Length: 604
Image (cartoon, rainbow, N blue to C red; front, side, top):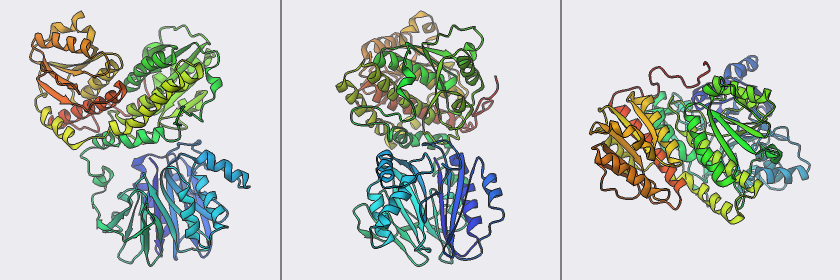
């Protein structure tokens, strides 16, 4: 999500910044901008859409002398993708770029407005520059003001800030979002949020640790750690392959995105959880006034997340919920009543079938909500309200982190609605919020687990098919597991509710039928176990995924013991993603670009 570049030196600053931003396009963005400070004057340019628009705006701007410059590609999380919301953001005499989410921005913004500061954007980032400017008036040095400003920030951030008065300085801070600095053979300094912009310029780089902050000048790199103690930079050799650098050392983008799920889920939660309630600044309580039913409509992976949501809305919010396959809903002359909230789910916000159902709902006068990863997409522009999932760009065609963040958003939304409808007690909501805070840890991939799945995958390269089975929310997860395997391995797989095996599908059971059984400890374990035993008795090959040992399993993937079934859900989600990945790798397939598929399906 988002990209940062920075430069101090006498080369062509504009071109260095623009080229750096091009190398970060793979991260996804909806607007971009640069700010250059030279001879005591700022020049700043911002544009929405692709970088070609920013290049057009800067075509008459030239940099041929010493300058400090910062640049940014933005993936919207607060505020629409407009020029005003694009970075860099400006204060009285300073500019800032920022990746991440400032969790306490609303509180800081109110404080600064009371002091007379005017805000131009809807973003959380703008508070950083105004906070710095406010302390600039009180502190002896600009660095003291910067240090005091970042001490007030809560959340995740990588920050670059430049200010008049110290024209040859870039101030930086890093916490939870990646950032590094490098030096070229002439001593010029380069910042970026990943390796790729620095390849070809620098041979070695310093990766900042969480809590690091400081400043860089033409002559020095000054770093303080989270405890305020100065430390020396630690330079290591930079990779030289740009595609490999984009993958951060992973074999495939899909693998990288599976590993990123912990971070993007943390981003999805940031600013949306207090101790006692879920906070969605982007929606108004009135959205649910007069609503007696929720209808969820989606395709593919998003349909599976909607199925998970239906369990949570009925369980926690006590509201009637139905789930529709968008391509079918369009043509069956559905009955739509105005006491229904129509919710569409799409990673891209452009899925053709789902978009058409949203238009139908709007025409019928229903209130609408979109759960989406891309601001300013067609669905976002059309719906009454939007909740962004903050998954960042997903280059692997087979969706992973988009699904994970959609389910997290639905879990939060079910609790938000439960408070609105008073269907859960304050204690129950607080307990659920604590569980939500534990999700990022539950999806962290451990080397031992991944290695186990790699070794086990060699046994699942043949046979006549797979059954993925589970009960309750683990049934939609079984569907998603089967879809992932189909998409990238080209092996036949089906997802079923565990209890449906004996109603026909068990006729297929034999040693060449592989059953991937989801057996959570805290949700219908004994019933699910009995269903798996029925398959085992018919000689099906069983791979059990569970925290509890299962003696009828031919293969067993042991998950951690969690306090709640939803935490088990997220860990098992990672397991089925990795299993599909490793089977596909062994079969020699193109994991990131499977045959016949496209990332955004914009045709019927």
